[in-house]
Length: 77
Image (cartoon, rainbow, N blue to C red; front, side, top):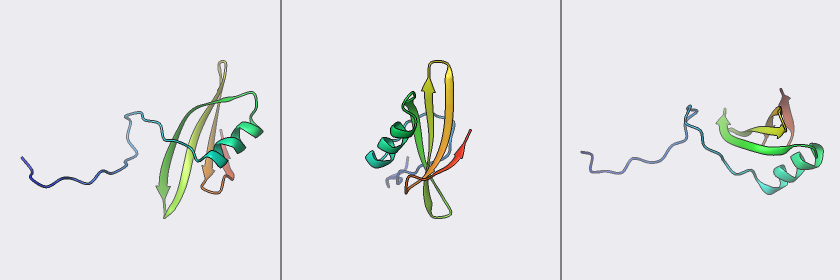
């Protein structure tokens, strides 16, 4: 058994978890997508920058967004 503690790390894995969006980004999303609610969000780092993948839902409709740390929507799907 290891005696030293292993530092926690974030990995892009299949185990679902939800990250908390910064309030300003959350408000911007809800302002632009009033008919949707935020189902889940995942934060990740790529090339030294922070991004958020957000899933919005409205009944059976889903909308996927990729947002940078400034709140700019980079990708819709």
